[in-house]
Image 1 (cartoon, helix red, strand yellow):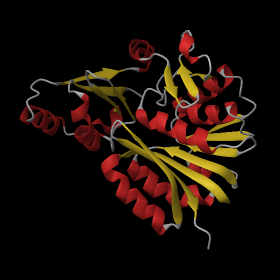
Image 2 (image 1 turned 60 degrees about the vertical axis):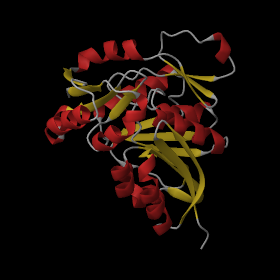
Image 3 (image 1 turned 135 degrees about the vertical axis):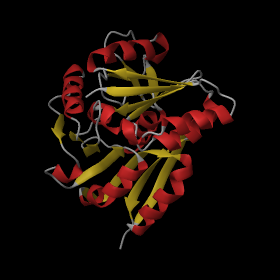
Image 4 (image 1 turned 90 degrees about the vertical axis):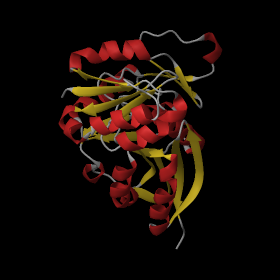
Length: 279
């Protein structure tokens, strides 16, 4: 499936407002000091109001700040080569396969992730937040379910950190293939299983950790299914939420008898860990 890349040439303090407008349509973002890039599947492009985006940018003094281009699957390797470098997230260092490990990160657990058309490179705050919160709670021998696995980075990280098994599920067949390839590259194919589908298609229950790094709207819709796969003393980890959306997620969590155990923020994004409140 072709993807549309939107580049908003605006500084980081301006990103949050436009992330909120685009997060329901985009499957991923790349943020840096020069621009915000959003990647929208071609079949969702009609729902993006380009004129409204341009008007908002112009009203804030950013004339001609929006550029749009289609990206065919064959173009993605070039996109990532232009944007990716090693990224640290807690004890993990996410590196594309051909990249050398920087000498000041020799203490890190290296994850070799080649994203192709999937997201979850460690170069976006939502992935880094999820990795950090995962590292803080994972115990060797845990069973992990990663919903919306993308590149497989969270499932792979779990196995590299000692999980007994990790299942990644994704509705995108390209992501499923990519995640399986990345599991092979990290020598955890015997620990990481990747299946096409959503959480309701995950065959097992009783996971010690269920993690989902998706948009808030999808997270809230999946919340009952996510909880149904969790052990009674397990951990639910949610990422992909903008900071202004925090309270709506906390309200939903409380309605499902969840206790907030930890939270973290970065670049306007919020992630959290929850446990079930004892009855």
